[in-house]
Each structure stands twice: as structure tokens, then as C-alpha cells.
Image (cartoon, rainbow, N blue to C red; front, top):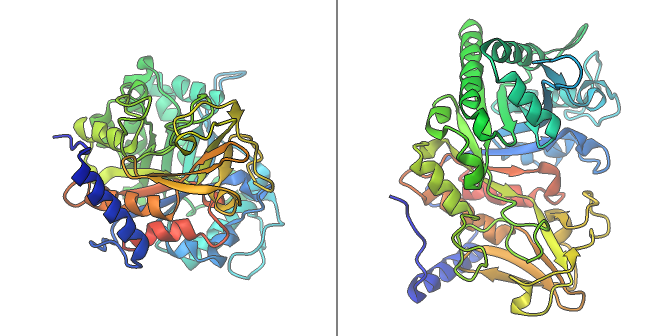
Length: 430
């Protein structure tokens, strides 16, 4: 049965008191379940403008806190030119060519493998229990079309999976250059399958599992398989969730981008619960409704990871009513000075938490944080230590035994110390 949030005064008071307790305490989760997954995405392009490298994860000790690192992205089956049901590197220079990245373990890179792949190899040597996965796809139209094409026939599915295994699992990244042993599996980020892709989506994942199982039996290894699991009924209704879940180790459930500057009204980007005062109330734009839908569809709770954003979304021209929440706007908030995303309407936690002039507010119904500057009429919605702790409590207690864990996008968006990641880890018992 779907558990609904209660909106009585007593319930609200108890949740407020619970949230205040989380802030005051410096203890881990009550269950201290070290089996929970904590996965973080590392974007290959973060080595450029953000100057965020694999070495940072060793220096700030985040590598000790996460269980899975998911490297984004590998490209899939571009359909421009001749049909091509294969995997491809997205950025050769970042992936395996650049010799200029800082060392992770203090030893120089000797080649022929360089770039992020060599850095990940060093990280894995230092942390042999850390699982490293390659995420295939992403939000680009080319990858979405590529998945749809490559999944369309049995022959193409087999060809695609064999290609991805050869490139990433067997490590044949270029002639004479090997990254064998680096990746422990695949994260499939097909955004977003349509109703015509539904059956082929399932069949593609079955093909991935089939070939990974065969390779694992030959290598005495256990290869992982996960997916980006979208929020929004218009999206997950196109996926045979129960059938798909049987092929997967876990599902990365989108717990963010519920609202943003594609809308003109301010709102929470990552609310845990729905709020009756929300103009979009009842439409499922919250974490609980999303998780509940996956559970109702037959996905085991132990396979569900709740997604947490390490970035926020913002609006400007927001009137000083209700501290800016659920108000009209004139457009996206300007990108804060120095923010590595350099995009109006979106900014990293590391930048947002350091801003001055903002008052911070907490919604005890949605369990979501926001900040508002009345002088500049600027509103930002983003997760903080408080809201993240509430979410990790939810992960531990949503059902008996809890959910499978949590994941976040992305590693570079945390502050330099990785403090938000460490809060998630502590509250999951790591």
C-alpha cells in the first residue's frame, strides 16, 4: 500500500522536530546499514572549466565515502551517416589521452593510458572495493535516437552490447591502449524512451544482462547494470518497470529537476513530499510519489536509489511574498560569480551555500530548503545538509529494510571538502 504523507498539525510538528533533531545531532543513521549504496556521478568534462579531477576525490576523502563512482558519459550508436549500433568514447582527450591530470596516488602516469581512465585506475588501486561504472547515453538527442535505433532489432541489440563490452569492460579503447579491469558495469541513461520503445527497452537490458553474465562466468566476476529511472508518469509509464528491474542491480531514481526555470513560477527542485500549497500539487512532482510509483509497479525497494542534486535552480524578479516560494518570476536567476556551471538559472551547491545576502527557509511539508534575497528578488532552491539528512532517513526507513541507497549528480558540484557527500554517507551508515 502506498504510504501517504499526513498533513495534520501534529504530524507537521513531529516532522519539524525531527528535522531540528537531525540538525542538532552528529550521529549516523539509526540503522547504520553499511550495505546501502552511495553512488556519485563524475562528469568527464569536469576536468576543464571546473578543474575538478579524480585526484580531488582522494584529497578530500570522498573516495572513502562512496560505494560506486559512475563515469559520465559514453556515447551510444549515433545514427548520423551509416547506421551504427556501437559504443563510442565521448571525449578521447579527457578519457584516455591528456597527460596533464594530477596524480591520484602520487606516482606519475607512464602511459600508454592517460586521462581520466588512468586516474580512475589509480583510484581503484587505492580503493579496491569502490565500484566504477560507465554511464552510457545522457540527455543528448543523438544518444536518445541512437538507443532507439540500436534497440530496435535483436541483431542490433546484440551488436551494441558486444561493442560496449569490448570498449569499456574489456578495455579496448584504442589500438595498443587498454583500460581492461577499470569498469565494473554499465549505467544505461536512455533519456527518455517513448511508448514505441517500451518493449525494446526491456529487450536491450536483457541483452546487456545476458552478455554480462556470460562474461562474468568466464572471468569469475560480477558485472553491474543500472539505469537512470525517470520521474514523471509520462516518462516511467513507457518502461516495463518490474520486468526491467529483474535485469538490474539497482535503479537510479530521478529525485530532482521536479521544477526549474522552464517554468515561470518558483518551486522546489527536489521536494521529498508533495505540498498542498504547491500549485502543481497532485501531479507527482516529488520524490515520495516517484518512489511510490516504482514500488507499486513491482520494483523491489532494495533496488531503488534516491537521487539527490548537488546543484540548485534559481529565478529572479520574484516578489517578496511567502519568501519567494510559489511566486511568479521574470526569468532565470543570473549565474553566481565564479560558479563553474556558468549557466543562468542553475548553480552548484558549493557556490550557493557561500552566497551572502540570502535568508534561508525550510518547508516542513515538502522537507525542502530554499534561499531568498528580497533586495535582488532572487530565489534559489537547493539541497543542504538538513534536507539531505531528512532524505537519507527516508531512504533508511521508507519501507522495512529501507531502499537500496542513494546517488547524486554530480561530484564536482559539492563544496571543495565534499561535505554534502559526507553527510549522505554518514546518514547511510558509511
